[in-house]
Image (cartoon, rainbow, N blue to C red):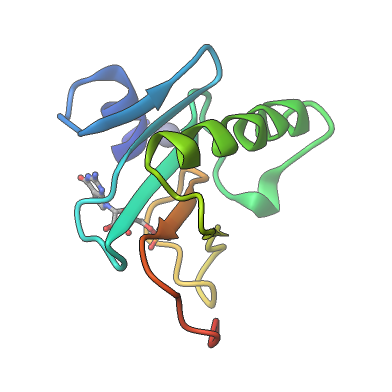
Length: 112
Ligand code: 5GP
Ligand code: ZN
């Protein structure tokens, strides 16, 4: 399967690593939309939040266990935003589920 984030997880495409454990990998976004912008992805390929199943939900839970550690690592004590885009209308460009962590400033109240 030709997947950009699977290639990044494998190390075939370089990335600026923020955090890694058995279940997930986090790296800085190549085109940051906030002073701090990283992505968290599961090591297994799940296409989007719309594809989460009873079997894969525990992996997604592991990502949410990692997010506070990543936020602490990045110095986001004043808060941050976690976003996952889904499908065409959600403007999902990479079809491997990923959670954006955005922070480093007061973010816009407008999310849509
Ligand atoms: P989406 O639009 O699918 O929610 O988010 C995809 C994100 O992946 C975008 O914010 C984009 O900047 C980021 N991205 C795309 N290609 C690369 C890459 O090769 N390396 C990194 N680090 N980020 C990427
Ligand atoms: Zn993938």
